[in-house]
Length: 494
Image (cartoon, rainbow, N blue to C red; front, side):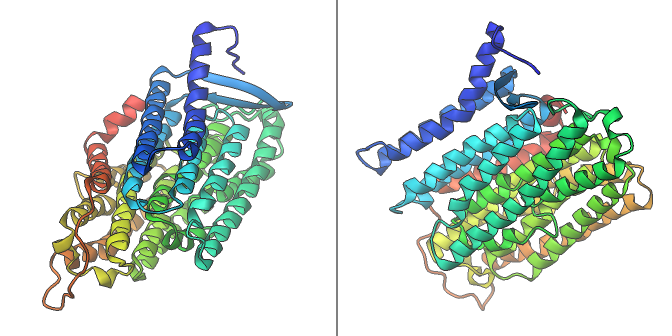
């Protein structure tokens, strides 16, 4: 357990970490509540909050360090530190939150309750920063739950009956999964004999686990399913296609692009930094986990292919795409982990952009269904072009990030040494990629080349730059990680 009180240099790093976590929460709430001369002035305050939070986050990534704040109970500490995985998730969180916050200036314009929306955006931002920097399971669990509680209001924001129902479903699923995760945490703390600080390869005490392997494996599997609920892992995926269609588009972008990946972060910390990949490799846990992940990839793609409501189609796509990451993680190899993290960036940028584009269609045209978008490219060429670029990445067309991540995942599977099962992930990925093309490309084709049956599309055209630029920035992010993804992983320390 690292203490920083007596080290001046580390004391500064501790303050920096604490500031990065608390600043978006405190300053975001203040920016939403202080009197202003108008909404334009308030948007400048929001911009300052997001900019300064990003600066603090970049400093944390660059300087590293840790912060041990206080003790909750015996062997239970609130502790934060910076490692390679922290840098990956913190970077992804900052990229998407920055883009979505700026986009929201246009999307929420004229909404009388927009300040309420931004309060929960900033609180959830701080919660995800804290979860990214968590140094033990208890700290991670606490902020994992806070991220859920602070995003439920985003789902039920419209306060319609479907929105309230979807928000409650999201809450109940998340709480059920979190309780399963908490049960696993109890067992792991018992088997650790220590404070449960994350260690590459795991922190379990072999003397304590001897003779209790069955209990340990069962607890680990329960934890994977529990934390995997947030990531939409079958059979706990049901909240995603319910929550996305009713949430505001910026909230859907955050939920799909990064908040659902809090489950991925928790699973990585559980498997690779707590239990240890070597403990699970070759056991029934690996087989069951990998099988569920591949089933989720295929099932999500099939459901998306059949769905006609655009945002619901994208939600089913998220169920499928996040389980690409789970498939890589379940290989229990460094290559699988790296491929999964590459796909985290690919999906964050691509799906984040797709939901923002869907928000433009809803905001400008009132169009919720795919068949309502025929000929939309004539009215909204920039928006549909962003939709196309993000689709290319999600399908896996080079040089976009989706191609590189899927290539890495396929290579990792074939070299994983898990026997005949190693052939299945590449096959499933190819089938899913074809289905992804089948449910995304027709939107673009019908949008740009509607044919003679095209209906006249009403609306004023593309939105302003405040909404277009964040979508374009996410497309460029997908392109960047498609070209420089491996170098970026090396820079993060992976």
